[in-house]
Image 1: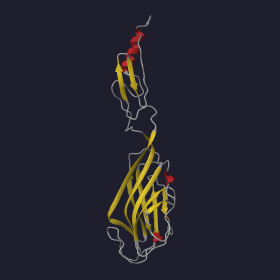
Image 2: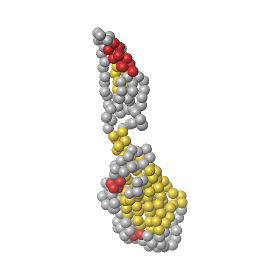
Image 3: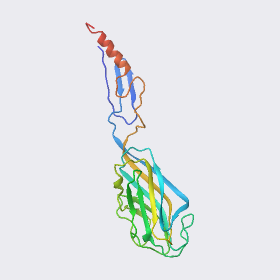
Image 4: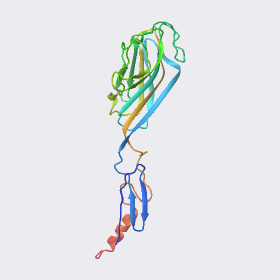
Length: 238
């Protein structure tokens, strides 16, 4: 009697043929593989730094290799706000002793599909003497937005939560818009980075399910078909 044995095994690696013996066929398939979170980060430092005074500019970072559904976004930016008419140095240092109008700072993040989240509004800050260079980290899990009379490095919420991007396409160019709303007190972006998480990516599956050996994904093996056909031909009346 022909004995045919199947084993369906959920594994964390691509499809593979587990074993083939005289007593039957053992076939392992990757089946029902759950999705896992995958995070891609991109960053850029500028030399000379990007400066704006009384206007708005933007810079973009490309994210790729994700699926089609954003679940989390985090961003880090190093910036300098200065006072007076003295430009910020090429390395991002404020050389002016004048009062810096921090209230002029506005930051926005735009997703590849065109959704905007405002991270810092005009008048969220007031100012200080002299200007300063800080690093701000933005993530929805942080407790409070940027505020106060001084520029202080730290971890903050975006004014518009980054959850506004959830469900959107993750891949593409994410753009940071930086605005200095009034002339004679420049703002610079010295560096920034963005991390995008997409949980729709199947775990450890690099692409189309592979086909190998005698077994095809989700199909009968050729050997199994031959054995079933041979068994059928031996039946009486065949």
